[in-house]
Image (cartoon, rainbow, N blue to C red; front, side, top):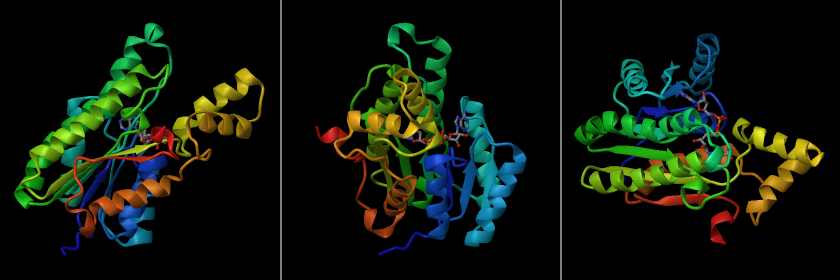
Length: 262
Ligand SMILES: NC(=O)c1ccc[n+]([C@@H]2O[C@H](COP(=O)([O-])OP(=O)(O)OC[C@H]3O[C@@H](n4cnc5c(N)ncnc54)[C@H](O)[C@@H]3O)[C@@H](O)[C@H]2O)c1
């Protein structure tokens, strides 16, 4: 078995939530990590130092805005400069906006498709040639249960996440001959800042506390009525990058308290 614990990893959206947990897990596992997200340069530099000190691995930071193809190219270039070629690409950055499809603002639609779907395509397109040349690579796409099933008021998010699951399968097929795997992780509710606006909205409409609103939000969809810890997604990502996941490719992996089992 080949051990892969020193491969450079680019984790998009790793200044917060799930991406930050994935970055911690990979760095703790020995991987050099490119941190990325919309943070100011000082907090980016602080995070980078914290990682280097805690884990003794090389780290970089980029605040490239990945809503455009140019932003994605900038991120790949900055990663190459900081750590060398990307061997592990974790497409995690994502945003949310909720409204009925017939009231959905065009700019929110374009923004969600750009960050949650197109960026994953542009980044994969730009790093896969290096992975193919190396004969090893991992693409981990953080999709969502909304890449498998739908919810009302999430037209752009569901379209983007279903698209991301489709993209994952194509990448798995195209690169099956080159030691590269591509998989989609599909979380249900995970305790991060992304879900807070939805909790706040329920609390204010129903006149209930934040904890009651969280329980209602999660329990509406998940037979197991509790949120997943971001670290659980980190651990699964590390597994996908490890020596026992060589043939695990093209998969859609729910971590959702039974949401999609229904
Ligand atoms: N939290 C959940 O319950 C949940 C459930 C299923 C899937 N997900 C998915 O997990 C991923 C991470 O979500 P989270 O809850 O940790 O979110 P979060 O809001 O905590 O973090 C999002 C990250 O993406 C970055 N980002 C956003 N827009 C960007 C842009 N234009 N350019 C560069 N970076 C940008 C932010 O800076 C941040 O680092 C997302 O793709 C989300 O859809 C989350």
